[in-house]
Structure formats: structure tokens, C-alpha cells
Length: 585
Image (tube, rainbow, N blue to C red; front, side):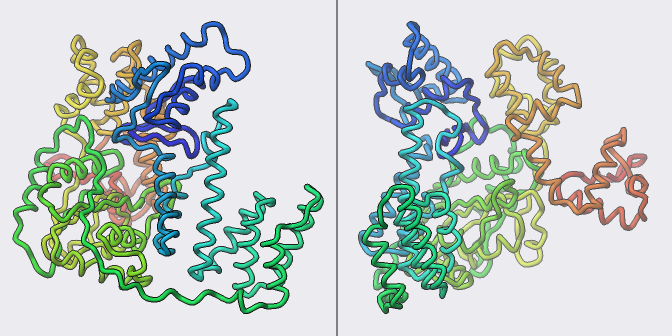
């Protein structure tokens, strides 16, 4: 499970959101997460939920909140998460991920690297720590204790931002800092360390007058707000800038490191998917990769393509987990975010930086040039047997720099669009993943919701599977809803999904789910292709010939074929095998 508090409280199980109902449960869970693996007394929880005047039944209500949380987590597949330990409760972290813990661990590693003079490595670790933040910590959760913890975490974040800025100045990266530090000073004008970093970054970027203006504005603010003068470090920097002191010049580049690359064994695969079902043919095809003869100048490569929610990542992670012991030199994993709604795709250079560090390359020895990074990566893998799992690949251009030159490693890439460019240069196993067969779809539903929910209604089970179009993501959402709501009958959920106007709403919790998958794919269509797709949705048949598609947008058959090819590549349409008397699409 994944717990995120560096932003609004968010809980996920196997990548699906877990709904925490109500402010009280959210507050209790947040307090337990903030003290993971430590006892939190009932009195502390009462004080967090009712800071001023707790009711007489407060302790009983806390017990009810914990019991409800346990039920929620049990339905998500985790029954040993919340433990009773007088005088309160403990959240046993185990293998579960908590973003606050990850943030603090990365921050400590970064500071340790900085103390030992490894500025490049320290800067990368602090940047990774700061990337865990999605907004204000524990946003929208009230209460003095929660607000105090949120303020403490925000203070740690600001300290880390300043420390990272200091390291970047040390490394001579002042130009990229000016905009970032300008925003930071505008939001926190009384933080003198931030103002000092901004002045130095501006001065080293050739903006001496702007650096002096930053000091003048800060001094006036401190005088007006607090009646004090800027501190000695800020005043000393101001004097040095006024006199163009040589002390302010960019620090000399660090001497080349003489450390030796140490081979390490990374194990970066995500946790296997619970209740994985079916895909036996695809798993067998992937197993055959392990029997392919080695080629010294070409990588072993497989791609899995399919529409959002069809289970590409689940298949890749499940197979990789089963085959991990066949790769003694480790497993590398990266989500390239090719279809992320909020973040841009990850650059190959950034992925190579992470992979090289995971393979034991000291940060100072990682080249800045992307081509040189790719060459070093190929060199390191030339004698190793490593599994490389690349999730959500957007294009072959994003994938190509991450391929080994050959040897014994295997690359497994997933994406919504078929990476056809791979075929021209590499021999690749190409898997186009489709929805589950009906029998496997009903099996997945019963695994998630429980066989007892369908024992007396096998017809409802088949209807529910069909209304989910046998799409694994939709099946998981429907099954999780039945598991979480004992009062919701199978027949009741079937009736909800039969209403085509509500179906996407039912299968898209919290703006995610099925709608998000279609939205991201549809967003990237060319306007003419999107218009055809909308018009095709008005047809009363799922099968149609190209001439019918041409008529929907009043275009030529040839142009219609081009647009249909775009929709097929986007996994929004499927080409049917020619059958006498049946349309071609």
C-alpha cells in the first residue's frame, strides 16, 4: 500500500485509490502514519480529533474509527496494518510506502552526502526528496495537532529547498536558480537564507543591480514588519556585491573523482499485483524470451501495448516478479510517465542518471551529456544479465537511449501506442493486450469482491463483467466497490452500470479510473481524428466499414483510412479479421 501525506491525504492499494471516509478517520490515520511503527495513545488521538471539547464518548468513537479503518484495509487486502498496543494503536509500516518517511530518508541521505563533499550526489538526493511533495502537507485536514505537524513538515521542506539551492550554487548552477528562488522569496519574504541565495544567483548570472534590489526590498520589509536590520550574512553579501568582490566568483570545478565504480545489484521492481488473473498466453510468450539465444549486438526486447486500464503494467510487473531470480545482476524499473495528466514525460537522461547510480556509478562520474550517459549505460550492461522494465513509454525516441547494446539483458516496455519503430531496428516480441476473456473477467471479479457476493447470482456476475467490457481496471473498481459496500447488491450495481449516462461516473472514482484513461488518450488525438471518434460513437453498431466512417465526417475513403489508423494506433478502435458479410472494423 502507498500512503501520501505531502499533499492531500491519499491512500492507494495496488495502484487503486482507497477511500477513507470522513474527517475523523482521516485525522486518526494521519496521526498513526506520522508515528508509523510507534504507539499513538488514544488520548493523543482524541486530542487530535477534538482539540477543544471532546465528547464523553470520544474514546469509543476513536475505537470505532480504528475498526472502520481496519475493515477498509482488510478489503484492500491488508489485514495486519493497524495493531492494538496499549495505551493506543500502532500502524505497522512493514513494506508499505509512506511518502513522509521516504522524504525524510532521502533528505538524510542527501545531507550525509553533502557532509562528505559529494555535492552532485547530495543535490540529486535532495531533489528526489522534494519531488515527493504534491502540495501543502495534509491539506484540508483541520485540527491543531495536524496543523502543527503540517507546519513542521513545511519547515523541513523549506530548509531542504535552501540546502539544495546552496549545493547548486556550489556546483555553479546559478542561472537555473534565479526563477525558482525568486518565487520562494516572494512566498516567504522573511527567510534570509533564501534571499541570500537569490542575491548570489543573480549576481553570478550578471544581474548585479537586481541582486542589490533584492537586498533593498528585504531590508525595508524587515524594518517595517519587525523593526530589525538584516542579519550579518546578508549584510556581508550586500557589501561584497557592492565592491564586486572576487570572493563571489563561481567556485572552481571540483577535482575529478578517483573513486572506483562499484557494481551493485539493484532490485527496483514494484510489488507484484494482488489477485493477478489470466494472461497465460502472454506470460508464456514472455517466458520464451528467457530461452532466446544471446545476441552480442542486439538487445532482447518485448513491448506490451494496449488501451489504458487493460492491465499492461500488471502483466509486466507480474511476469518480471516471477522471472526476477533469472537476472542475477538486478532489475531496473522506471515509470516514464508518457501518459501522465499532470507531469511531463520523464526524459531518458533523467532515467539514465537514476539507473547509473543504481548500478553503482558515483554521481560525479555520471556524464552530463545524454549520449555519453547512454554509452556508459550500455558499457555497464554489456557483461551483465539485467531486467529493465520501462513503464508508460510514450515513443520510441523516449525508449531508444535506455536500450542496452546487446548481451544478456532483457528489456520489457509498456505503452498505450504500439512502438512500431522498434520493428525496423530490433527483433522484438510485440504483445497487443486486449480485454480479458469473459471467464477470466468473472474470475477476477470474484477474487476482488469475494465469492460469497456472487454465489447466489451467477447471472449478475456475468452481466457485471459484460458492463465493465471485461476491462481489468473497470473490473477491479467494480469488485472493490462491492467489497467495500456490503449493502450494495450485485443487481444494484448492474442497474447503475446499465445507465450509459452514469457508467463512466460509477467506474471513475475521484476523477480517476476509466474516464481518466480515456481522457488522456483522447486528449492527444488530432482534431479531425477526435471528431471522427465522437461521430463513430453515435453509430448503433460496434462494427463498421471504412466507408461508413468516412460518411460520419464527410471525407474521402482514403482520408478516412488514415484517421482510422490513428484511432487504431491510439487503441481506441480494433481491426476485425475479415469475415464474409461482416464489416472490416
